[in-house]
Length: 318
Image 1: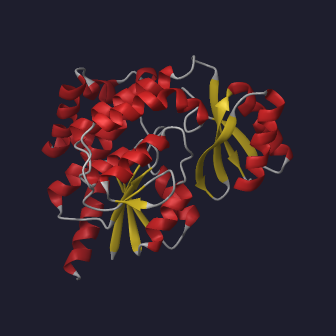
Image 2 (image 1 turned 30 degrees about the horizontal axis):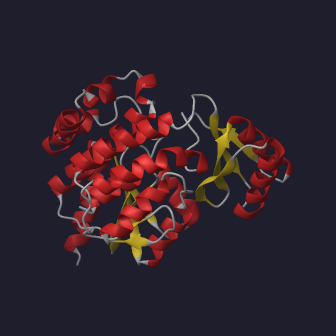
Image 3 (image 1 turned 90 degrees about the vertical axis):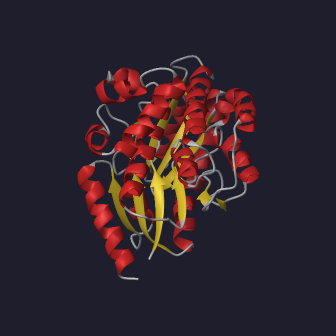
C-alpha cells in the first residue's frame, strides 16, 4: 500500500490545538520549543491559550499551523517508521509537506512562513480584500463570472482555490468579490459564502508581496526533496530544489489547484492519504475528489494511536 501525507492550511487552526499531543510526545514538544526560539516570541502559549482573535492573524496562523502539523509528524515518526510515497499541502500546508520531505528545515520554514504572513497582511489595507467560497459552479463558468465582475467594478476578482468539484474559492477586492458572488448565483451556483480571512490570498493582488517574498525564498536553504511534493500551482510533483523555489514564489499569487494535487497523488498509485494537523478539511475534500482514496487523520493521541496501529499492521503484512 502506498501512503501520502497531506497538511492543512489556514482556517484549520483553533486555540488549544495540540495540547494533548504536547503532553505525551517529547518530539512534538520539541517542535514548538524550536518555533518559540526561532521566532523570538511564545507561539506555544498563543496556540494553547489564545486569544482566538490573535491566533487568527495570518502572520501568527501560518507558523502556528506549520508547528502543529510538524509536531504531529514528529509524534508519528517517534512511534512508527513510515515513509510516505508523496506529500502535499493546501497553501500554507505545502511548507509542512516540504519539511516532511526534508527539503526545508523546520526552523527555516517557520521563519519563512511568519514573514510570508506579514507580507500577505501588508499587501493591502485591512478590509479592502475578500474571499468567498462558491458552491455548485464549475471552473469555466466561474471564470467568466469573475471576468464580468471585474469588468463591471473595475477591480480584481479571480479564482483562488480549486478545492474539489463544486467548491471553488474566489479572491479579490471586497466589492468585486461581492459582485462575483451575485453573478455566480445568477449563473447557477448554489451558494456564495464570504470567508473570514484577513486578505485576498492567491490572486494577483498578492503580487505586491511577491518580490519581497521571492528574495526570502532565494535566501532560504532549500535542498532536493527526499520524496516528491505536489505543488499547488500546477498539481505536479517535484523533488528538485530549484523547481520547489519556483513553485513557492508563484504560489503566493496563483490559484491553489488542490483537485489537481489529489489526482496527481492518486495517479502515483497512492491508496491511503493521512492528513496531519488540525481538523479533517482535506480528508473531506479528498473524498469528494476521489472516493477510492482512503483517508485517515492525526491531531491528538487517540487519532495518533489509531493511525500507528493501521500503519504497523500494513508493515507487518508485507
